Length: 358
Image (cartoon, rainbow, N blue to C red):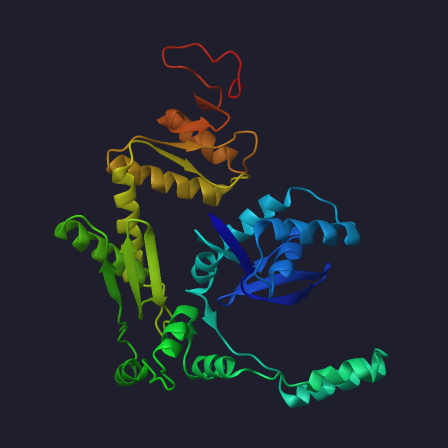
């Protein structure tokens, strides 16, 4: 199986009293990163690399910068993937992996205005002392091929994914109508109308009933992602087309219902549920875990909360819940034994030693 990686989002420097720190912006949401994560994000920015190429670039940069390494670069890559700061594509061939990587990515043409280029030229030339032979490249205009011009022309008309642009070029489509005109006119009549157009498709099912259930789940996913898009569900997972919701509030009662329904469905399909928060759990994490535990009990599914008693900021809350009779609802992730203030066993006695024996 082939895998390709690239960076997602854009970078800004955030100034604080402690100094500047790197911040990555994805979908108008800010993500702080440490030095190792920022190095990996910078390596993948404007590049599409294989996993072994990422390691080669990272080792070279780490040796040149003398960065203190706290964890492996593979762990950093996984954390960036989970947060959506880098994306990956997989496939049997590198061509398939490249298509999987770019199919749902959107192209937004960018360019610097001429006044900004002039100011940058003057600053770099006269204040920074850089040779004008180098800074004059700011005024260089790339010579694009006919195919590149078609891509830029389509991308400037309306937000399109790479898959949509490829299909448009194959069908020789040069002009696109704005699909949001009708929605904008309806919303202008009554701003309180929360309207979106979504499509759910189920494919690869063995029966008509199963295909219908898959289509309903795909439609729920499309609406949960903001609407104004199509979602296709197959036995291998979901594929999304479109997804640029225009003027629709994503946090709505509909979205909450969709998330709740999906959560209940997943709980009912499980034989046992283990609820875990982040490593240094706080009151929010334990409170949310307690809420999920209640959902599991309502669904008659056995569930426990895994938390390290020696690495939590919500010790007082856990003690209160244990005293209220919920000692068996907590386990230590280092050992599957009940966790309580003294780890008391039913009928008296104590766990003598072990991960939880405190």
